[in-house]
Length: 197
Image (cartoon, rainbow, N blue to C red; front, side, top):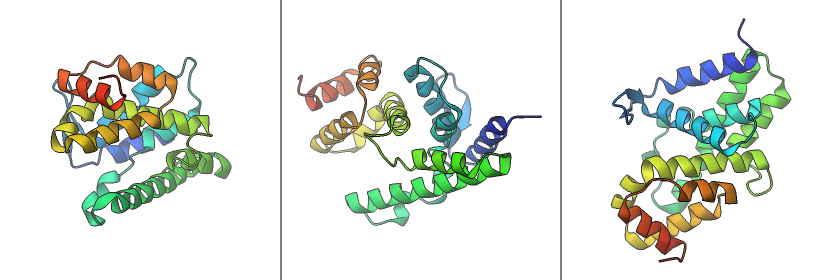
């Protein structure tokens, strides 16, 4: 019989697989966008942790964007306040849904709530698990979405985004980010943002 961890992970990925938006991996494999994102998050967690990550952190990292497509950004007002409200609400919903999946699989209420707290990013800067999740999210962004995103955003605004992203990352994540393959435009943008242009 599958463990509570295996049952929860399977349930999380089943919800990810319902994302109607598709993406294509580097090898040409089509995959629901959210499932691809979740797999990338798990990949970076394995790079960040020298020993096997704890179960609750693994679940939180896997579920960070759970069913995000159900509430599009366009449902909220434009601007920074609208974005932050949307992101907060998404974290609350993903945390609640994950906690319910965990309780259904046999986890304690305390373990389910702890995982939801990590997903909601409560305690960033003080909680090592929340920091690990944030590091994974930043690395996934820089590796997979940064180049395309930077073509759509005004230059000075993009510099500020890189600076804010960098400020949320741990020194270990900084080292991994600097080793990422990037095109010349992205490298120049990062150097400018970090003051080493």
